[in-house]
Structures are given as structure tokens and as C-alpha cells.
Image (tube, rainbow, N blue to C red; front, top):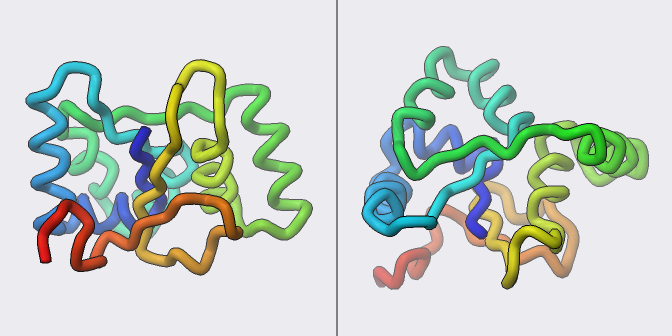
Length: 132
């Protein structure tokens, strides 16, 4: 599962070349989706009018809702000092879940915001999609 945090969501909305290519490629592959945690989408929209509409225009983008269980877990993470609401929702989405197999990859513009053990990839890293 590929997750975009607030920074990656903003980058996609702003036309980041590699992220746009990733979204377009995933649209051609059935079942491949980019997941944006609802609180990351909310934060991106609050920082940039229209960012939400621009990323939701991609058919490969879905929003990971803040469910009842997720809201309690995210609230606990915030209280325990893991970051703000959007960061903690992205972190929650990256944790192992029964409905997803394999390891999640969290695309971000600030890898240092996440604790060790979370697979993060900076959207501007040279090898993000195998390009060097």
C-alpha cells in the first residue's frame, strides 16, 4: 500500500512530476491505489485552496477515512507525542492492517517526522521510481 502524507499530497496537487507519473501509472493498473489519509487531505486543503480537488481528480487516489477505531488510535498517538493529527493519521495508515498484505510505503516530504520502523520515502529522493 502506498500512502501520501500531507507534504506528498501537496506535492501531487502542485504537479510534482514523479508523483504525477506514479498516479498516472497506477490508474492503468487495476487495484493499485494511492491512499491519502483524510486528515492529510484536510491539512493539504487548509494550506492550499483546491489541493483536495486536484488530487482527487486522479482516478488512482482514494481517501483513507478516519473511522471510529482510527480516531481513537490517532488521538492516542497525538497524546503520546508522535506529531499532529495529519502526521498521526498517516502513521496509523502505515501500520499493518488485516485488510492489506505486505508492507506499506509512506511517501513524504519530511521523513524525520516519522519514527524508526516506518518505511518512508522522500518524494524528491533520486531513486523514488527507479530514476537516477
